[in-house]
Image 1: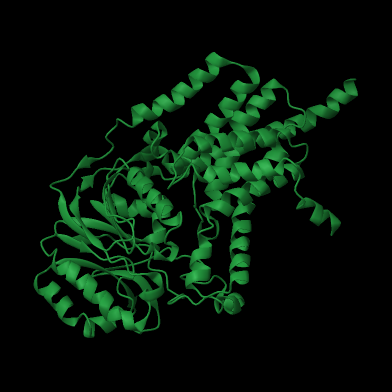
Image 2: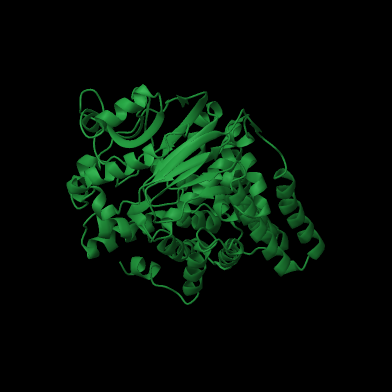
Length: 515
């Protein structure tokens, strides 16, 4: 028991590690000071190098992770306490458990570094640690975090360099590939500080960052036909009113009015669950005439709504085309502990603490094809799915452009909406498709294939973003390969590290015998 408590007892340098982790968050949206990611990783790698034992490396990673996720996903308290009616003490405990869970991935990285690095490194060993081992382990931890238990790819390091020259690599190796380049750059800067090898270090950095400039000039995809006139609706319905029965008709009236003012658009998009109820109910009732008119006019109006199966036993977080209700998309990647509860039989008591409407969605089929809207194939996604580039790649391959919807009112006035917008910008770069994003409270925007926001509505204001979205054809290397090269590279580096470790173990007794 004493040993366990001692593990969590902070040492003097742990305050610096906690601060570095918290500082790294500000490299991401909405602050966007990208060099802070480099600074934070330089500090972490330095402390890892000084760690005398594996246990100490894990402790260092823990305090870094507490700082990073403690600041970076603190927005979770907003949805749990303010909108799920969970008492404040339980909300704090729930958020801390989630932060500790995410921090465990950093601790895994620290454990690998502590185990694989040489205990008394010489100059060559230090170069290997900073340039090979640590960047590879950092990215491996991100890859695992982005896939294990459904994946939690929050605040991927590469996202912080959306506006740097490293963004040129995103269509090739994805955001997590850029994470490796950021970590490698941090290692090179550490090596420069340690050895003063100015020419070699400057050359390496110039090749990495200059390569991004050159790749940024490559047109991986080409325009296809004329732009599409699109209208993205932002109702700005407060989350504390959204699910109230008394607000159903005012909400629908607001969106119907916005829609009728923009019937000249080729495609009209309502946000996620803009209709706070079942589609089959409003189709027969409140939206009956509206949907009938959309069908008569053959108008593509994408509604964020809850859809039930024919038996009425399962319900989905969906997008339904009011102009042709046989066209729909069901969200595939659900949010754990919000849209569904893993191990429900075991956690049913916990699920009762959260007053979240429709918190037991069914996941949609994994092989859903893009919708045919007018002359174009359009790939759809809902909210959290924008964080998973490899899952969106098959849809992007077949689609001319992408549409995503979200309701970030759960996290209004926190960092989360900006972080999710940054995810969407990275997906546009990775997938080589323009993205139209309709949200309840913001960020409602159109993103170009260069990852830049071409037009956007003000936050927390009702309005319609009327603009043009350009269809594209062709594939980026990332769409073709996904994370496969990155997995192979990181596991290859891990294999090399294992080889070096065991070779040292074999040679050490021989040296002692010869002495």
